[in-house]
Image (cartoon, rainbow, N blue to C red):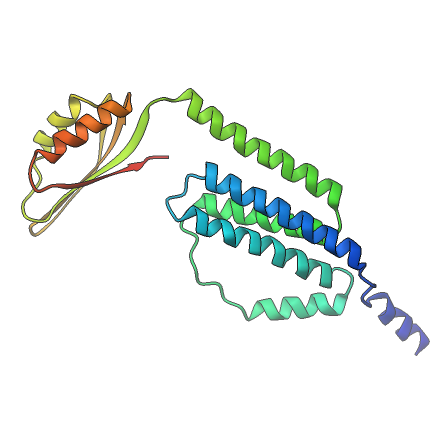
Amino acid sequence: MNELNNLLSQFGTDNISILDFLINLMLTLLSAYLLSLIYARFGASLSNRNKLAQTIILLSLTTMIIITIVKSSLALSLGLVGALSIVRFRTAVKEPEELAYFFIAISIGLGFGADQKEVTLIGIVFVFLFIILTRKMNRDNSSQQNLILTLTNAKAKIDETIILNTLKEYCSEINLKRIDESGEISELALNVQYNSIEDLVKSKDALSKLGNIDFSFIERH
């Protein structure tokens, strides 16, 4: 019986220092907040980046609190596994970049929740610098505008020849990706490249003069 009690006591929850918990909580909040600013500033997602940035902060804080509670208790750890096994996350992550930032946010919470301050701080500083330098290099090395152009006409078929001839005057590169026709609805998708914003504006004005054609430009990257 004594041996069993000693074994069970090894898996008991150690006392959590309130001061250390508050320090880790503040470090998590600060790191997650900086990550949210970087995502809002340098992210390439088409979704609402400001709204998702708030989710990043909550994800880091929640992860940190959970890890702090269960890290020294086998019973709580098993209970967490059982609880998560009945949870189903059905919200799809639409873009790989969002998933990458979610993993960074979870890593922040895991690191500070496990009280690994030095390693976590070094890791997130390296990640932050990598994101910022990569984005700046991509923007500095390319002044060209690489876009996806989608054209739709719900009243008549689109004349591809007229569209291509119009774009050739302003685009340095045009690649046809898709042509869809269903009844009176016609849709055309192209990858286009402009050497300057001025050429993009001119081509937009030229497309506007072609008639009842709806079009949209989306960043290819």
